[in-house]
Image (tube, rainbow, N blue to C red; front, side, top):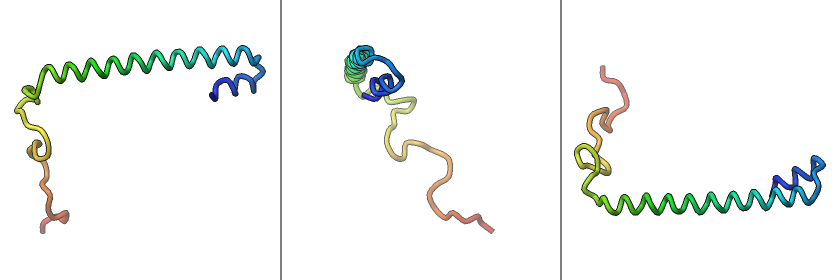
Length: 78
């Protein structure tokens, strides 16, 4: 809605601004459809693979990462 208003503000005709609005709405609609198809395809691919492949060691969730600092005191030792 903002683009046609700006176009009219800069002197474009109402018909030109309306055409731009329709074109932008069409492009937005097509992009949404393509995005939904892509998301469905990705979800279908993940569902087909199942839970068998979860990474190098097959771990997920909290505690899966090893190493680094552990929760505890935040002051340095003397």
